[in-house]
Image 1: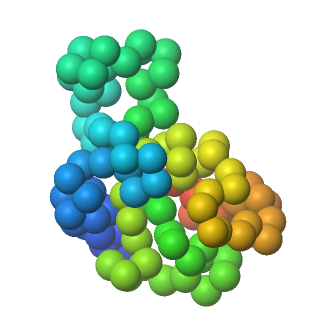
Image 2: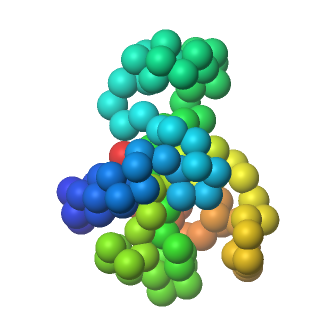
Length: 107
Ligand SMILES: [Zn+2]
């Protein structure tokens, strides 16, 4: 169901004004080069601003691919940052058998 999660992510990104749900940084979806030039982000750091789909309730915890549960977050917030506001992570995402299999970062 990759296509539906992409749709949800795009919708979420649009309603968030193209900004990351957590850090409110702008994100890019298809062209890191344009983004890097526009926001003067060094090429080596630009991958962190990629727009990704984030589950508010992780799939491991029964979260579904619905518009209520999907937000758009930059790769940094989705993958690297931990201990976000009010969210408890019972285990690192990397160890989740479901997201491991499907890839925790949706394209
Ligand atoms: Zn972010």
